[in-house]
Image (cartoon, rainbow, N blue to C red; front, side, top):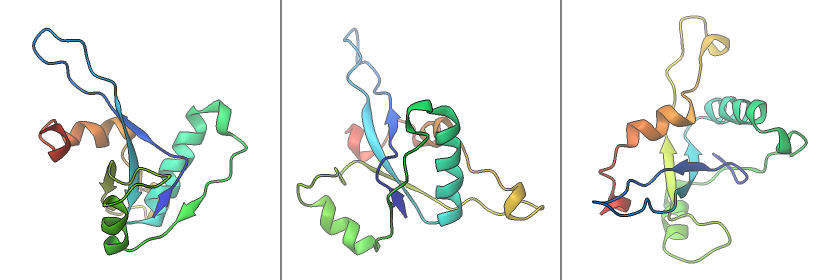
Length: 116
């Protein structure tokens, strides 16, 4: 699942004495609709300028995503982060919290293929 309007920014690290490169925009894609909706709600609570925006929710198969990564398109599918489902808390769906964008980016580290 994905919402086209939602993006994460990964801050690139500066090399020895060089200025920090521009941050990379990543399109988050979720394996769980519930996690995606929870993240969207957190995003809306923080971003005042998109309060009235209706999310464009899309569902696509993984092989479709791989094909889109191979070609140019309006949405850059080459910079995607796959967000795994969050395990349910003891209190059920209402007690389950999706990790924040900062947590998700911190888990990525710097050793991704995009950093090579």
